Image (cartoon, rainbow over all chains, first blue to last red; front, side, top):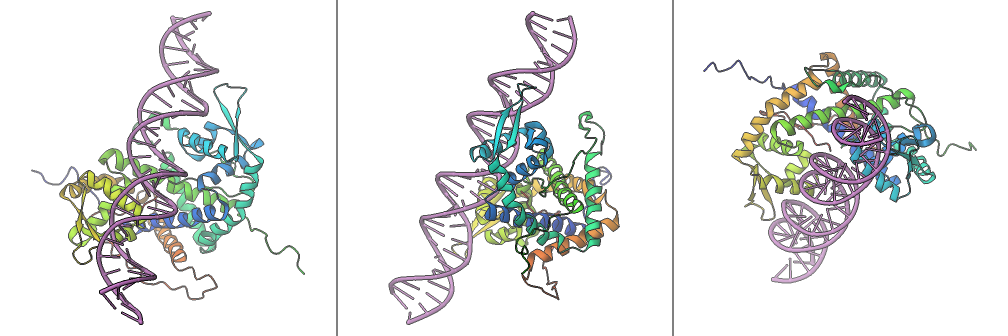
Length: 185
Length: 185
DNA sequence: CCAAAGAAGTTGAACTTTCAACACTCACCT
DNA sequence: AGGTGAGTGTTGAAAGTTCAACTTCTTTGG
């Protein structure tokens, strides 16, 4: 038996392992704080808030369901359930789409608008408190750099196959009033 | 009197907003890849894997439930449900605790051990592929620094101003064979 | 024009996570 | 003793997520 060549794993070093755990834990704890703040101070779940953010950011405060799902990187089904719950609470409304009878618009209601306007200040404060206020400008720069690099690695690493993955222009017109999120789970 | 001081929000700048979104997206996408790999290549959920990691790391391959929950930062209830599912699949076993009749041990079974041994190589490979292979040593250093700072801020957020932010002994005996995680969700 | 393929959204069932009890045991106090 | 308060772990229901159909409409190609 030629014992070693084929499947040796290059394990993580101690430092790598610590970094990986810390990285996960950082997000975990940070997100827990932010999510709890949102929930308790505004009665919105992170999912609620994210939907409202994207609607607020969009022209006419309305979006096609699929477009919203792609922006949020949620499955359409998950979003549909979420929208049903939010519709029940009056935060959004569904509208028929004249151009494509299969489709539907999601529209921000006045209630939804005031909900996010009420939630945003405290949310921003929390985000500052856990991230922007504790890191130096240099650290923030590094973090931005790391994020960009990792995301680039995830978006375009066409390894060997899978023709249908091209996500080209990262059209993310970060715009108006309220800070954004991207889900978890 | 300065009229409008009370409730002005200091919003996020464009750059801050972009960083915040990218940060969340980075974790999101990265975690999606890692989780999917785990699930499809080993039949283990991230939760399964994390439980197994911590049991593998512990003396005697057994831990008290609360200890495990604290390490993982899961609620006891969530862990209990998770353990029930894993017990059904034979990955772990529950044992009575002689010292404290209220308590219980969770123990790694042979099946659990071989499950994680089978899963680990591919998992490590994936983690390298999305993180350690795409970042330079300098970037990794920065990231480690950022993680440490943010975590310190979350752990000991002395509400008022605290000049000497203590770096207490974060006793994390990162030890044996397998890389760790910390749960999402 | 019509059948087949495909896209948009929704739905129901299974699964996971959260939340609020619950049962049981321990530790302390008089 | 014996009562009370706290700690350990489990449970059931509600909320949220995933997965695989399914319905409806659009597009494509003969």
